[in-house]
Amino acid sequence: MENNSLEKSIKLQKRPPKASPMSAALTFAWRALLRIRYVPEQLFDVTVFPIIFLLMFTYLFGGAISGSTGEYLDFVLPGILVMTVAMITMYTGLDLNKDIEKGVFDRFRSLPIWQPAVLVGALLVDVVRYSLAATIMITLGYILGFRAEAGFSGIVLAVLVILFFSFSLSWIWTMLGIIVRSEKALMAISMMLLFPLTFLSSVFVDPSTMPNWLQHFVDINPITFVVDASRGLIHGYDVTSELLIITYISVGLIAVFGTLTMYFFRNKN
Amino acid sequence: MDHSNTLYAVEADHLVKAFGKERAVDGISLKVPKGIVYGFLGPNGAGKTTMIRMLATLLKPTEGQAKVMGYDLAKEADEVRQSISLTGQFASVDEEISGRENLIFIGRLVGFSRKEAKQRADELLAAFNLQDAAKRQVKKYSGGMRRRIDIAASIITSPELLFLDEPTTGLDPRSRNEVWTVIRALVKNGTTVFLTTQYLEEADQLADLIGVIDRGVLIAEGTSAELKSSIGVRSLIIEFEDERDLNKAESIFEGMFTQTPEVDRGRLSISVTMKDQSKAAKAIGELANHQIAVKDFSMQQPSLDDVFLTITGKPAKEKGGESNGE
Ligand SMILES: Nc1ncnc2c1ncn2[C@@H]1O[C@H](COP(=O)(O)OP(=O)(O)OP(=O)(O)O)[C@@H](O)[C@H]1O
Ligand SMILES: [Mg+2]
Image 1 (cartoon, rainbow over the protein chains, first blue to last red):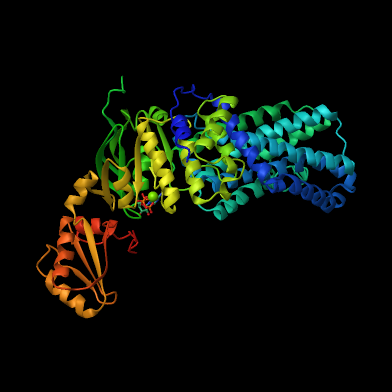
Image 2 (image 1 turned 90 degrees about the horizontal axis):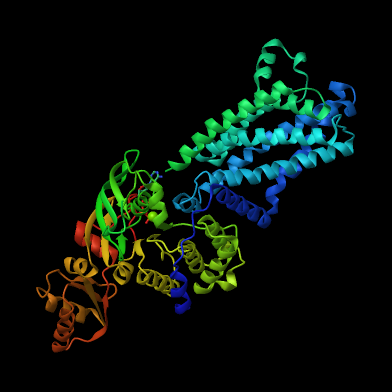
């Protein structure tokens, strides 16, 4: 080892000023992007998944529910978009769960940084991943004959709402990712929560066709609000009240699960 | 409050960490003066990592309190983090990205601009002889390279106190020496180093003060010389050509040493533990006087087992019960 350069490199006079929360979070996001560059297969869940979902549900249910796949596609695409993105938020927790077992998290937690940056950075990249999934689905939808009444701007607005909601939803998975010890158990819990949430909603069918007791659940299911809002934004009808409710739910999710996540993150054994 | 004039890098007062019923650290008090290497010596499962993780703000002590660089562990965790750096026992950098990316990444986190972080990364890569591996994923590094990148990541801004959890376990002698060189250079530059190790030799070579920990309890503390004089320090091992000589030697040594020599008939050897090295020459001389041929002889450092044997009266055992090599 080069002794001179070693001693020189150790003598560091200047201590930089503390990184801002924003810059720390972006640095963590940069790390997540680097990891994707080394293992692009990580994008499987946001590329192949959406394609399979869209094709499967359109052709499986299309004929039976709306009589024609074309019409059904206009109805179901916003729903499947919400469902798919909500489903893949689950991977946020799974990735974190795997990552956190590694010693490098000890280093992060012993650094003088804004601690939530570790998770916020990862979630920012996840939002990019969700956008990729949304883009792929909408493009495929267009090829299959889907048309948005409200045009491009409607789609962009709907995607933004979905991303915002998914970001909030992710905090549930980050919390579980920290406290649940095994990956398998985490997967099971996530599925158990996500399946009823996504299927018992207005994703596939109009809730008015459902039995009464089920309608009650569907009507208060947050996914229903997000699906209805996306549909409205894409096809051009007023969804102000839905948007308001989504805002409450999302802010509530972040406040509750963000706080819990940070609590468990700090006090992890 | 001015913290720069505290004398101690670590002042732990009866720290306890319990995991359920098990007390991994069971009431440890210790003081580490600034500017030294403190060697925390103990077998697997002794509680070394748990102790370090508490001192580095990663684990909340169940009982007790501590000051690190003059800051209260519980109340001033942020200030503590500002003054310390931690190199954990396992993968303490991101194995999925390259060594250089790791250093830039940590550099950015501690507040360097992009350009400064890159400069600092390259400077450290050169100093740690890692330029050739700079662009390779860390998971493809050898054990020695990995340990070096771990430590480089910890000194991007020179910490006042550096925790190193078993920095040389599993390294070959050359890589181990490289790590030792780094540690010595750091101390020369004023950093206090708190390291854990399972090897007495390492503590001996590096540490100004050694704490011996077993089952969560600090069972001895002192300089290497103090510890050595408190235990049967060294073993003289003599091998013979045949059993006749071995038997003769055994009777000659009888009563000559405080501890009865151990005889290994399979290997035709005798091992004598002694505090005073001059006794070794006397023993060999005595054999020569009796015309006993010695095939080979050597002095051995006491192993961690010897230390434990002497201090606790029982061999070092892992909590699981499995005996622990060195
Ligand atoms: N998170 C945890 N939950 C439960 N028990 C734990 C936890 N961490 C450590 N322990 C237990 O505490 C004891 C001390 O462990 P620790 O890792 O501190 O030992 P160590 O001295 O670092 O050992 P090694 O040399 O193997 O690294 C062990 O019996 C271990 O099983
Ligand atoms: Mg350990």
